[in-house]
Length: 112
Image (cartoon, rainbow, N blue to C red; front, side, top):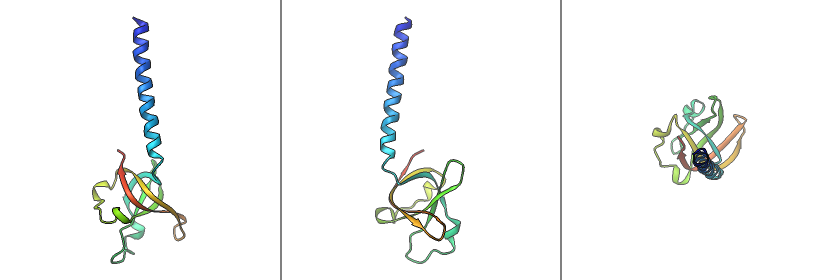
């Protein structure tokens, strides 16, 4: 009976491990992962025709980088994603004014 139970537990562990490994491989396509927030830095400097800029926070609430939608993501309403953990597919560039990274993203995926 113990052998049967051990086998069942081992199978569950193996399944959970395989699922976690698959998730890690998928996360590799993102330029940045974190919590999406409005940017107070760029709120007053947005120009007509310029995409709104956001910031991405880490688990402790510190800003990782600033981001802006481009291409297919530019016309998307992102208000429902504010405050949620997201993954962004895009290009990472240096941002001189803030001495941080800046990501122009073409795809945003909720991760929570």
